Image (cartoon, rainbow, N blue to C red; front, side, top):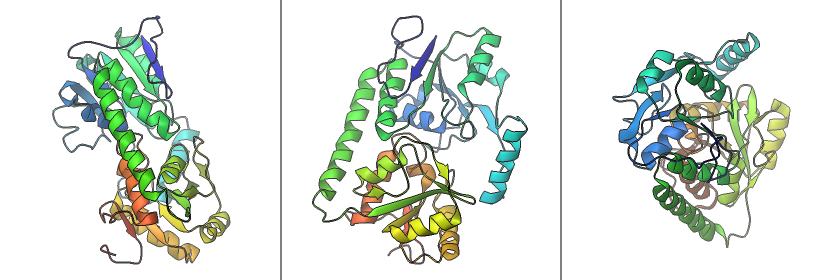
Length: 325
């Protein structure tokens, strides 16, 4: 059976009956964001397989099979990673590899996967082929959110597929309440700062999908970005003009934490000669993974733009200033 979730919190299995299990199910997550959702739903003890990139919570890979491997980019700068990925794609090589033996050993009943980005995770087609080859009848839940609303809806989708719909509803409700609290905290601000979000620095890419929504929910106006649309490449000249026109530049490099973001944000600011405030943000935790922590990202961006709360230096830092500024 196959479940396709594109923001619909109540998908229907292809055979015509509703998805969902009762009792304990064996879950394999092929996405770091899905792994985070599983744990947020209190289902960590039912998670038997994950990817090499699943690193939150800290115990995500402990005692579980690593069923997906990928490119070794350790020590490569953004330009070198981009060149490597482009070369692999041009050659038709796989960016992610499913360990079919390990996958079979997991004996999954629910598999969480995606079709959103070939560069970001294993495509669901690879999972379908493996299940067919192995003769496995697991429910495959494909999570392809494009907006923040879609992301929150996928929590309900995962919860329903795993037989804990009420937990999903409670978690989603709590996240919406936090978003409402941010909205109230910024509603009376006299202006909405213009915010440019850079998702990759070399070559430069502007953030898309749900990232513009994060800015809007935090009380800002996205620059050169459209909610729900893909991230797009840009030129250095266009980036410089957009940065000059913005009130804040957020450097949120896909796949990187705060320390690397600070380094890349500093280099970008120096290259552009940017006088607009430039902030580095822990993109891996708060921006690019479509899971519950995106709400943490909204709260952090609201703190940056409007000072509604102190900015946690572990989450974001203005480059050129001390971590406590």
